[in-house]
Image (cartoon, rainbow, N blue to C red; front, side, top):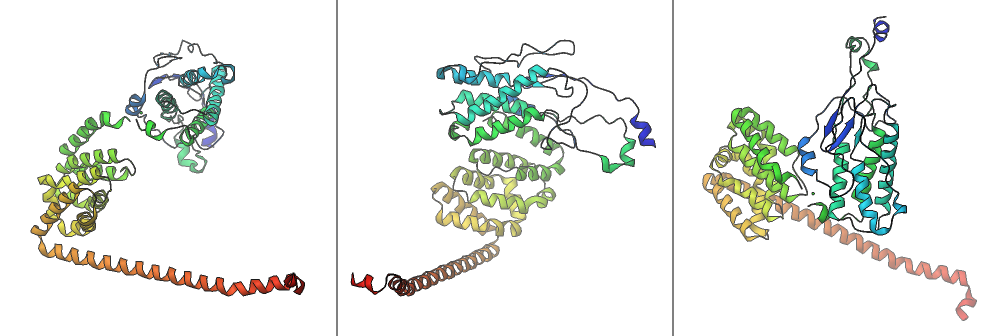
Length: 420
């Protein structure tokens, strides 16, 4: 009964105007329902303004609505459809492609399905044309196209999920089962943008080496690392939380970013106290061990430089009984097999530190490593022997099957076939 009464109460509507990273957002009132669950969200998140500013770039040509300011009383800026790709010469298609990308950087508010229907439909049709162009393109995408493609994708996808207003909070206490996830009303456009992103990445015309140049992390990483370190210095209890976060998002295939992460890790560890260090050291040095084993010499070298920091070295020495067994295999393999001479030299220095501090522990780890290597070699030999036996058995079976095949041929052809 209470639910029925509250449902009859009038609901408030809000108007909002947003301007994120070079995109204009036209506001409206009520909400509409999306056609798929891909755009669902259960809570609000904040836009990453740093990423948007890092990838945003100025266009030399085409339509740019990035600086357009839209308020509640004014209408949208001029938004007209551009010519189709088939209506322009081949030499003009790339310029038209960039203009269409710029046109799609205008972000509309879908909370009112009756507003800006023409403009929304123009953008949807333009997005479809962009997907078709990416799919059927025969020429390599230049740096400008890549920059503007990333800009269009970022402006549309890096957005704030605004939760529906809940005036009737009492309903949650009475009927939790009817709480539905929030559907993103802008999915008619977002779906095509996601499709464009997929086709853009998978396209053979996308040069991976050229794409690695639109990089933005190095431009602000130093400042970001400084801010994080300041938090840790003010409250040392945050150290293990920050370290867990770095390990969670540790880069796998980007070596230059991995070097930056190790540098930031050193700054955080320098402000870390023993209790916080002990809470994360096992997983931390598993990752450092992987860095020590990296074939990329800059990653391995930067990880070995951690022992040049007196505070970090003291933390490691205090907890050497746990840390050394974790990283010893990487140190030993580096000293024997690493291709870079500088990495080998630094590895020998680190091994000497452990050997001088605790010779008994060092010998235990060395014996354990030798036993493990012997077991691995034994397993390898058994595997090779098993495969060799299988190959011999297969060869014997092939030979034994040859007379059977000859007999079958004779029985099929008959004696007359032999005489001929």
